[in-house]
Image (cartoon, rainbow, N blue to C red; front, side):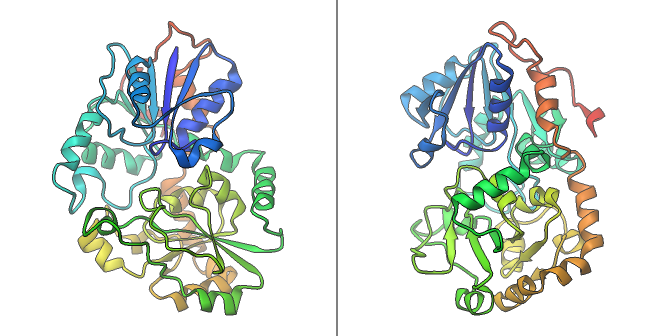
Length: 375
């Protein structure tokens, strides 16, 4: 069996990585090929075949694959061969509207992506609230299996403390430091509107952060892959750019609290039980004009919604008290969105599509309809 993996157009990360690592560990008779981006080439195992994303070799690999495993649209012109199987894991619980539900998109973009959706055989869902939204947004009529996300299994793994220590050591962070992971989502106007050369504007008052927290805190910035090349130089500032770190799941473990806005990272990070602060300084603009939401964030937010940098730094400085005040909301958030994140999502995916003994003659099928029994 020939399996081709792609994550965010060339990274070694996310649920495709978790599926790959599980199949390699099991030792099945499978040929693995990864699509790669230049920024991530050093992250891939030395013994795995890689081809550059978008290259002629990439197209040939996709068209020869028995199985394609992707966590995003593959916006390339290729033909899935007859009998091949496309497992779409997707990459997050949607708060912000996606695909056909967005408030605005560049002309022709959604129609072009429809060609990739037409290739999907199965779609994974991380939780029941996401399933209907995926169906609506993508117009997908094939099976949707509620398995949880394989990428999140590490967050419940016995290896999590070891990984935390290794990542912090690699970043040069002492164990006594409080690590604040900041994961802003991307803005449509930054990517698709205007001249296309606008830089990411850092909304945190770094001087205030340094004056009040700098001795004991480290701020890690993880930009969305859509805008990770739009950051002005931060050399000399009290923030470390970890946008090119191979996999965000490692950073979740290294961090002590999360700061985000409308990113799906909040749903994944909630598995850890660690504090979440929402820095929603442009809430009305993002919700009402740029993208739109599927539900009222204020009603379900697992932590405080903060509109200024001063409020954010205040909350970080007093995070224990802030977390205690939002403990009930946090538990409700976990119950709603992380019920399937028990550390065994990868096992469920392998049982469904790659049963033991997977070989060249055992290409997966859709395995019936929706697996609602996993709810």
